[in-house]
Length: 69
Image (cartoon, rainbow, N blue to C red; front, side):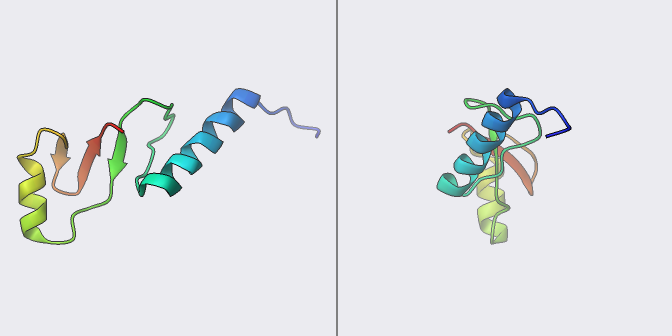
């Protein structure tokens, strides 16, 4: 109790944890509901190459792709 806590940050963290659990994704740093989330890496090379050409998954590289929920 001696350290202050931001209720807004606590609610944002709770939303991020619930989103991660419900959708199997990883909210990035400073994520807010409605922002893009990070999808898990592809399990096969074929899936990774297909994801690189899919407009739903903007990818910086084959292992770092995002999507909107």
